[in-house]
Length: 420
Image 1: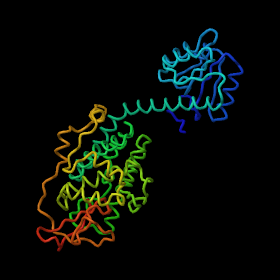
Image 2 (image 1 turned 180 degrees about the horizontal axis):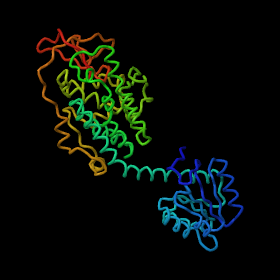
Image 3 (image 1 turned 90 degrees about the horizontal axis):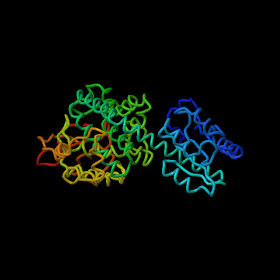
Image 4 (image 1 turned 60 degrees about the vertical axis):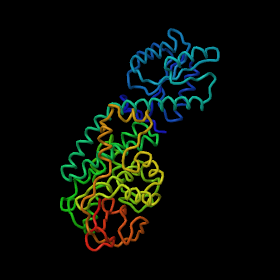
């Protein structure tokens, strides 16, 4: 269990628990049980004294008896909540005062203990109280930070676009696609935010790649391919300097890992790859295949779907491919999601793209004049590519190797390989 709720104003590393009861024996029991479990208990036999010593942020949870002289537990809870509205409070009651304790729960008490209670019951209530406070705090963090992080992420995406005009809009689309997949998976709003911004910033490391490599229209050499692959590590290094971006940095680092362990930079296998990385890998490959690049035109949506499904379970997490099918239809358009999900996704918490605009941009792009290319040797057979044509989603320096054959004759004659 992670007990860190927020930086403590008291500077204590351990969760601090204020115990208020007029019975010294109960206070001794509470102190001993909490200390053994790694908490820092502070005991007080007088509720008025507890109020005078209480400072916001000084305690992580309060345990209070209901019936005490001078002030009851309900009044104490109200007084402390005036100083710290989100303070978790566990009330302790005897069998004869259960109705009063229920009233306390109705007024916002986090939990209830009935005397005599066991150590396991005590610790269970304290853990639940801390967990509830953690969720409330993270929800508040999300509400405040989400618009700020979105603005920063979109600004950085614009910086990418300034260097490589084909990438900036790709980042915007990828963030929105990934967020919708996260919503279908039932992830909470904070996780959706993390994955959305991970999509916006997945290629931020390209800022550190030389133009000679990034904008090269021809085939990359092995050393250039190695340089291109560095963009995921560079991007993670840019983001992980701040703790608030740590989870996003992990997504950026691992969005080119493969389900079968043949990806980069760390060769992670299966579930060891962060979920956000697995989500973005699928959305990235599909969006890259149906988008024009400096070195080749877009593939058809039909071909992109065929490649994605052919490599489900090898390059991609099969479950995530299934989720992607719930988000994007066979024509490359967004599918409508559950109305409750759509309402959340279109809220003003973040900066969504208008649905009509995104539908249009995800639609099948018109094919340009096809490139005539020679496929590189590959050790991975592709059930989609025909007549020796190279696999469209074969893991490579940046992600997807795309090779299209000439008009008419499907047998390639001359050309180059490049990464998407």
